[in-house]
Amino acid sequence: MEKARLVRHVRSHPGDGDAWVNLGITYCRMEKYPSAVAALRKALKIDPRNADALYNLGICFHRMGKYDKAIRQYRRLRLIDPDLADKLFKVLNAV
Figure (tube, rainbow, N blue to C red):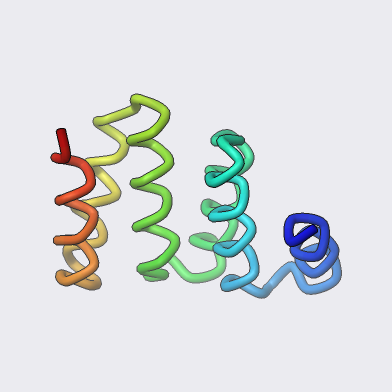
């Protein structure tokens, strides 16, 4: 239900970066990682310094097994929000 509402919202408000982040998170929870990555990248086109988008993009790449890309998001995030970057670092290094 949430996904459908978010899809409608971003169609009518394509410049709403937070909505794109929320849609990306929703897709990630559904394990639809390519769709999650696409939504999070749209959020980053709107605001390249969107810490939530970078964090969740790192999570998605990690879950996809794309560890190099996940680490790149961590490095970008570290420059914007060191505390959130530390949280991502812990997820990336969890065993």
